[in-house]
Image (cartoon, rainbow, N blue to C red):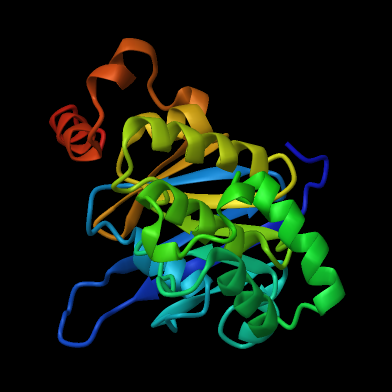
Amino acid sequence: MSNDNRVMIRVENLTKFYRGNPKPAVDDISFEVRAGEVLGFVGPNGAGKTTTMKILTSFLAPSGGRAEVAGFDVYQQSLEARQRIGYLPEDTPLYKGMTVVDYLAFVARVRRIAPDTFKARLKRVAEQCAIRDRLGNLIGELSKGYRQRVGLAQALLHDPEVLILDEPTSGLDPNQIVEIRNIIKEFGKTKTVIFSTHILPEVQITCSRVLMIADGKIVKDAAASEFGGGEAVQAITSLEEVFRKMTLQGAV
């Protein structure tokens, strides 16, 4: 973890309602993430993870409360906040008809990265994400694992302070999951990372801290080392099962 102890993500009483639904998707949640933390944002499908991430990345406006990234309000100062965020959505939107290098060059232009700076950044992210031998390939011809790596590369290209990754290992095979997990751990040495998952062992292996969310509310905030372990982690891979057990025990 970095020696920098700044609060990089601050969420205060954040609430989000969707039109036509009286129940909030995110219900008055508050938390902070400091520099150098790898935070696992976990919960069953529909718990509010993606909604929270979309608010943090300025894709959605909150219904109440506020959020800051690197000291900038994500609603009032969205451009400044977004400049400091690398974001990988769950569906990894990529242009499949472009080669990897052309796509990353396009992202660099959108991010207003100078051409001479782009060459150095491209070399760095290609090495970090292990895609140097795929730069000339069409994205549509890559495996899902390599497309995830390209998605991570675009999120890192502008050297952001904060990485926000929504289910980055979703749909990958076991070997690909290990590869992406190792990349995230390496990022966490120099970046603040928040990533969502509904698979419990992901957070045990990758994260320094865990936030568990259910029905739009935070129900647990603990160091990853305190979040179960050993045989229990191997036996319970689905958070839906975790919540069922916690409910039966009166913990939720």
